[in-house]
Image 1 (tube, rainbow, N blue to C red):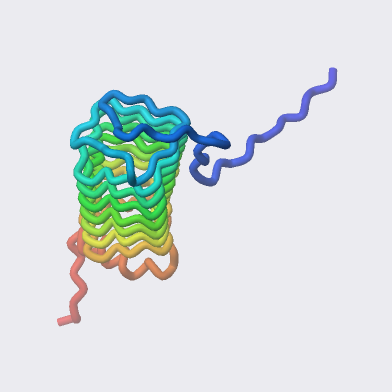
Image 2 (cartoon, helix red, strand yellow):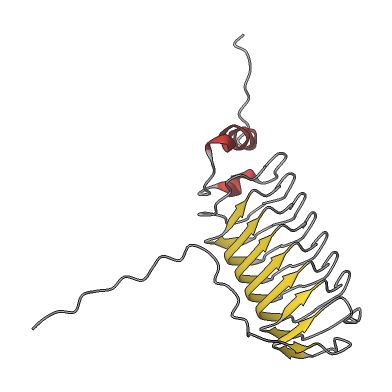
Length: 225
């Protein structure tokens, strides 16, 4: 009996792209609590109240939307694009993002504690002082983004990458980052450098990362007496 040849699946190299429709419905004038947007395109003219609980976004495109300082509790977001949106100081605790992209957005001081980021790409953004405490990322790729002073306490990463990012003074205490790519990223003043165990770096990062690890281990470099 002839045996069927086994076919190997291609290795997944990055986040899956959002599955978007070919056309969108126009967003309502205001974003209401508990709203379910499916196939909606929203812009800067959409009014967003201070607190929007239980929001669901499916197959949406948001461009220039002002979400700064808003509390979006219970947010579930799938197959959606954010472009030039302002999420500075936004509270997105326990939010769930699946196949979502953020391009040229602001996350300064945003709070994403306990969030789940699955197949998410963040590129060209500012996320200084952002909080992702106890959040999880699976195929989360962050590129050309500033995360200076960000708090990633107990962040768990699976197949993630922080490429050409500024991680200066970020906190990685008790984070699990094994297998994470850090190529091109700056790490000056990084806190909790032992969390870098199992990460991948480039040759040019050997000296700064090595210095961080030696300091964390209490190794002193002195002249021989």
